[in-house]
Length: 229
Image 1 (cartoon, rainbow, N blue to C red):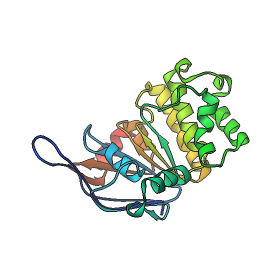
Image 2: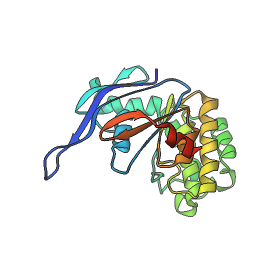
Image 3: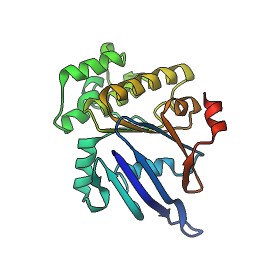
């Protein structure tokens, strides 16, 4: 089991009193499994992903990632877990402006001490980035930046890949290409995938789909699956 979350809650203070974003959420993700998390804007999808990725802490409940309980980890321990086991793809890419595309792609793998030039070259080729590796992020299109971000997350061969709206900034055709390649690479590396998305097309490609609403998770209704397909 790569991810096991049980009765996770998260509340934020507001001027009108506490706002419960997650009210006892539980989910599991196994090795090699792909899971899409959908929900309306503001439903807490990104909040849940940040908790599972050890970027934030839950108010209550238990989360284990790659067999490690997050509740007992220090900030340094959380950073080490992300470095060792988790690949993250952010909606806004979060590429390092001072590094070219090749260095950005290899960055996470170098941090994890698992830099493999041959694997990075393979990723660059598969992602259609070979000719732009010497360019800096500002010189890349949105689609190219997104593909660098995907490659960076996969370069360290993470146990689990977590993606927040990985195709949200792309047109439909580019989204389909990027989604297909991301799922293909995840399958080849044996990683698990948790993807937060508004895209029905992307959600339909995942092996499972959960919908977050009112602070609770439920299996996506059949009608939503049919529409996505």
